[in-house]
Length: 492
Image (cartoon, rainbow, N blue to C red; front, side):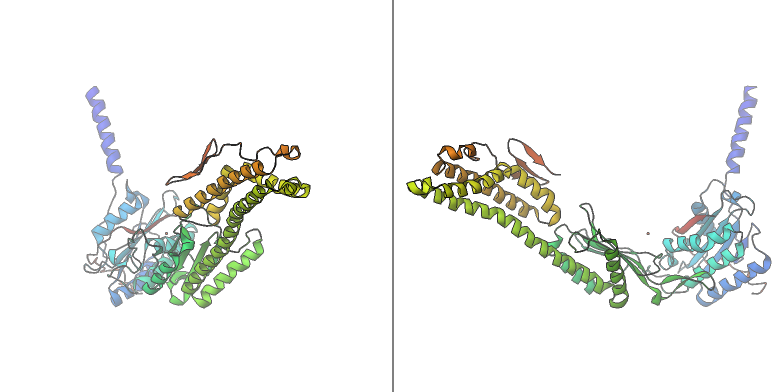
């Protein structure tokens, strides 16, 4: 009995295994192979006629295959199509210029419907994955869901044929991304700029205003339909100063709902993010006008001119902030100079009895020293904290510049404390100013220090910052093309 049960289980297991095995049909020698009967014979011949025209003209080979979902077995649509491609071999052996458009799914059952455009090595450059995905999702899937199978497949084929007859078939992909050195500041993946333009941009970006090494980066974006610009404020973790999405000219033709290419349709979307600009993010309408102005400039001046203009704008406003920065810290250091002269006057006051007893002078000194004492009480810790939280993002500085400024600040605070102590000793010995005490002379302060990753400060404590004929559909042998798995898949 146990042996019978084991044999039954083995039989069920093996049946389950074979039921999941994918079915890869033999080549039909047809341009359109409709195993699912989605199309009429006339519709198949019409599609085949269009496809054969491209094959006869340029040898580029597109195959359309419609299968039941059950053919997939336990394979994904990507793995199944790759195996089908290897068996049918669309495209010429030396060019690998083939593609398969496969539709898996039943007219009745909506579960598990799949769609994929699978490309050979030679057409991956002109028909990249992101463009395949757009043809599927924007052109084919909506019509497939409505049951308009012929319209969906015809539009999809027309879109593919619009591109694979173009340049670069069998050659190195036009938009192949290269691995660039890590010290670059311009990453032009979309090939928008010339080598000379990239060199000029790199030179601009290496100036002092870009100590945080913000980059210019471009990418292909086939969804861009109109020039647009977006201005935002950058944050500490941002890596890009200007990010550009580029559509080299792909668009949907409304007359036949197919995807086409025309260089006159090239468009850009630009994202500019910087802390050094004059844009008021609270004034939304003004910000929209600025963005529209940049988008208009892209169309009229060109993307290179606009990119350079934005970088120049960043540099100008960086310079303005540096001046404010200099005034702020200059005023702090000026206090030290003033305190020095006051201490000298107070020293002379000890030898001049009338000057020492003059109430107006003593009150004047008292007011000044009250302000200075308050400054000193909040000095070492407070101003360094204020500097770090305000100016470290306000103006990008190198680490050695930050350390130098902190040392200068600490030195000025210590000198102020010393001068206040001297003034108190030299001049304020009457009961009238006893409430001032000895200024900051009776307090203990420690100087600031810095490490490679953060700055710390102490004052008895520390602080660290932190992508059309009946024979048209026959005699279509695969030419031996190979595929590396490029393309895109969609559910419908």
